[in-house]
Structure formats: structure tokens, C-alpha cells
Length: 131
Image 1 (cartoon, one colour):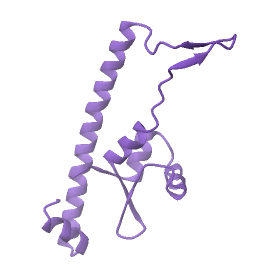
Image 2 (image 1 turned 90 degrees about the horizontal axis):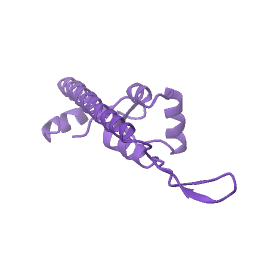
Image 3 (image 1 turned 30 degrees about the horizontal axis):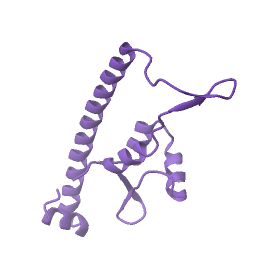
């Protein structure tokens, strides 16, 4: 089961205001989201957030010089920069993995508590072995 992020967690992760996420949802412009328990409880699946970000990756391949000619742009200027970027990417991936695991554990615990309280959706998740 994919990790679920709250609106606050995603806003902190993306460094945008929660109101921005709400605007994106209303406009259909942000990452896909899940509504739980009616309209109030909104969660974001980590895979949907990753897809949203992947769709917005910009990798410049050409730039126009001052005289209007098109020339290729080098993405990395040195081996040192490339290695630093690789290490940074690995650290970010490890941090995201830990964050997703923590969020998943907290979500599962919350769903178990809701199932114990008689919530039919949480009970169905429990019966299906999803939590």
C-alpha cells in the first residue's frame, strides 16, 4: 500500500502553502489526491506526488545565444558537480523513503483505530488486509 501524505506534510515537502494545495485541487492542477470520509479528509499518495513532480521536471537542452543562434547547453559543468548532485539525490531519496515509511505506519495505526471504533471503510480495509 502506498504511503499517504497529509496536506500539511505535502505543503512542507513542496515548500508551498496549504492554500496553494487547495487552489490546485480546485483547479485540477496539483497532484492527484484521495478523499477519505467525505469531503474533509484529503490525502496524497506518495506515488501520485512523485508522478506530479516527474511530469514537471525541466531539463534544458538548448538555449539561444545573444546573437540568436541555438547552441547546446551542458547540464553538468564538472565531474565534481555531477558527484555532488548524485550524493544529494541519494540523500534526498533516503529521506523521502524514511518519511514515507513513517507516514505509512501512522496512517495504518489511524485506520486500525478507526476500524476499532466501527468505521465501515476502515473495517473493510482491515478485512482486505490492506492495513
